[in-house]
Image (cartoon, rainbow over all chains, first blue to last red; front, top):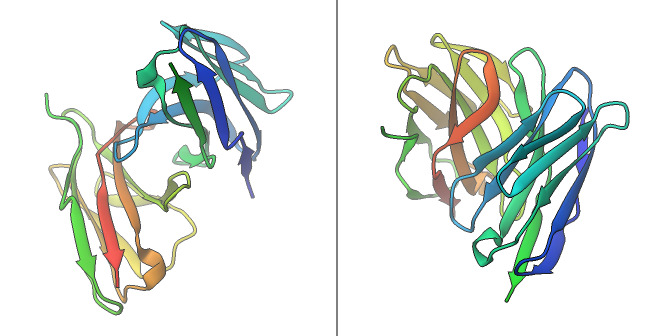
Length: 110
Length: 113
């Protein structure tokens, strides 16, 4: 089977930096993705890592270590609108379907 | 450019009934995946359709079935509804085998009473 672990809640203040960790156990691993979901909204793609290292997209960065089965999402210069749930997901299987973690609820305080 | 659209947005059914949910993928996408998201949980993969065939299936019973049409739109059917089927049903589209970046619709909130 497969499993992903990420913290259930993280709180930070505006302008700060926050890191959301994700560890996974899976077979047939293709890559690690991150999605953001606001309450009542659709999950939206943030980043994808297939290889070890850091991927940067604006204020968001994502890191992957395949040997450690570990990744993280780094959010810089936090804004109130970043308050949302963040999901890590591993791609696996012949259809590369995504298996999602349970999500991390990020609350950004003023 | 329309994104992924799903209908209806909300649905209330009773136990034992059947339901059909619909999804139109983002323009240019040919692959549709369905996910079930319970409150406070991450989406769970139901199945994926490509070239009008079910390509892969998650750990869901046969009560869950689907279809993909020649225009790439898709339906999810659930028979013999159970209370536990109450959830947000999300449709996601992508192109070909490239599932690294999925585009999700806003989902159908299904309540089974």
